[in-house]
Amino acid sequence: MSLRAFIAVDIEDEAILARIKGLQARLVATDGILKLVEPGNIHITLWFLGNITPFRAERIYEGMKSISFRPFKIELTGVGAFPRPTRPRVIWLGIGRGSEELRAIYEQLKDILRPLGFKPDPKGFTPHVTVARVKRHGPGLVKAIMDCSTERFGTFEAREIRLKKSVLTPRGPIYSTLYSVQAGANVGLR
Image (cartoon, rainbow, N blue to C red; front, side, top):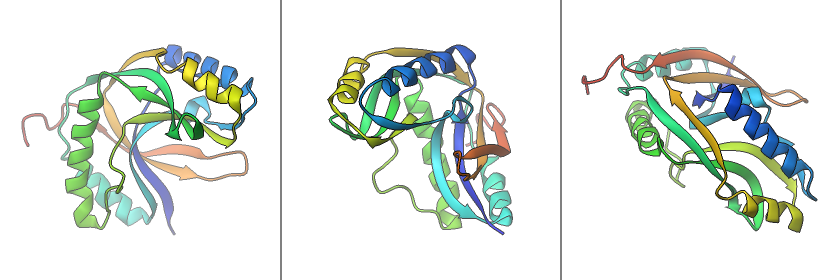
């Protein structure tokens, strides 16, 4: 039996999620055809693992326990798109404050996951929050993305990272937490 998994920082701040829902409503009102990320699924992916066995998930969690980080603030600011705003496939929120801490956690994950056979993304790690996937874009959607490029969505405190399971359904993915690692547990041990 395998499970589809990833490591993430969840965003659970209700005020931030309400602002994201407002953005999504504005984007849907354009000429684009979008698949929105459900508010309960909003997160920052640190590492997509793909399909793994439950045994492998336990080994990953054992490694994650060695990650050292303090609670830190993450600011969600700016809207952009991959591969670029004029040809959007994925619409995202940027990370202002907190991006260095996320990169430091990612670097620790590289050290943990490489020996387990996981390769880092060849494109590198760009901390972001996916809010929508674009099925079709038009000039109105492109303009909306550009108009929101400096919008601020709020700041929250990251206190844990989670190993999550994703079950794909016709209505969209359902995420659940398999394991979590709290901030502060290993500070000063690395």
